[in-house]
Length: 161
Image (cartoon, rainbow, N blue to C red):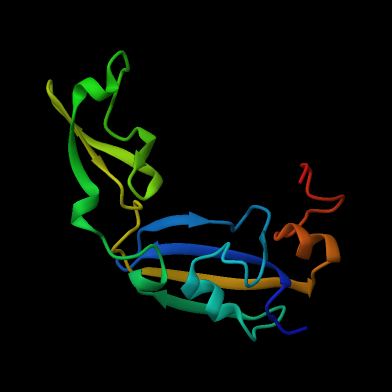
């Protein structure tokens, strides 16, 4: 069966930076199962899966604009430490922040006695990624999966909709 929009795809992947630093992998674990065409995956990987079949293996380079976007310097901001009054803040912590564009995740990248520097960019923004992919299985989505907008494990999705 060929992967099309709304196929349920099981795949193994390893994702690395251009210099070979491994960021994540499903190898040795359960395969990742996704409903194709619902943008669960980054755009570059999802596009590359179209037309593939069970057993296909491929290597793919994905530029930032088809992954997590380019870095936007304006998303790095210094805010008064008083905004975190009563909280123990450390570099690497993430928070949800209210912005004029709505809720956004930010990561603390620096702290001083007076200020906290937060970064609203995705940690992989601006980084070209390399994927090694193996398509383990492809099947038609069930009516329930299509209605819910995601793939289900055996026995259902395990939560209420």
